Length: 79
Image 1 (cartoon, rainbow, N blue to C red):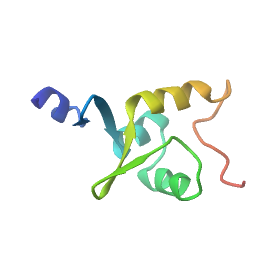
Image 2: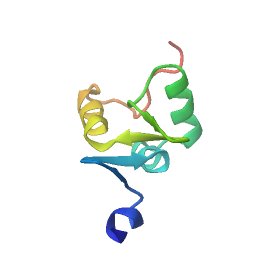
Image 3: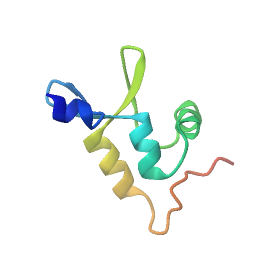
Image 4: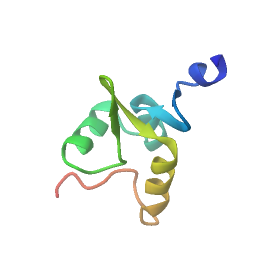
C-alpha cells in the first residue's frame, strides 16, 4: 500500500522492515555509522534482502529496549 511505501517501509510476508536511513534518523547517527556497526558486528540487527540491508522493526525495537539506560545512541567504536 502507499501508506507503507510512503513511510519507507518494505513488506515481506508478515514482517515489517525499516530502511537504514530510518534507523539512522531514530538513533541520530549517519548511514555510514550503521554500515560500520554492521561490518563490526555491532548495532541493531540487519538482514540482507536483495541488494539492501533492512532492519526488522520488531528486532530493532527489542535491540533498542535492551540498550543500557543512558545509552548515547552509539555502541562503542573502540571495541
